[in-house]
Length: 109
Image (cartoon, rainbow, N blue to C red; front, side, top):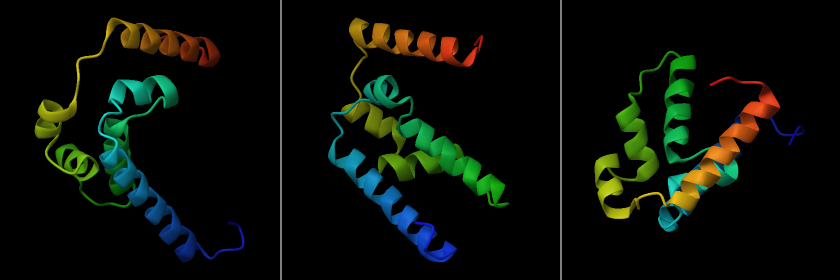
């Protein structure tokens, strides 16, 4: 992608992000805990990254508005309609991932 000008690269990245949001929306059965276990990010992370990107550019974007954009509806509605309670197995896998991450990075959190 180095041969592309910055505007084109930004447009392509934005299009890919919109497609990721559509893909997540089309696959609501994929729980945030599953995403965290497999990829160490979730829909809420995407929302936080949008807020941070806005702040870096001197724009204001509140977290709830960012979540509504990512989830395609208010988070509370999405949670009531689609979010399942994490199973003990999911929580164990999540904890194992976090511990492995801490060991790799030396984080104490």
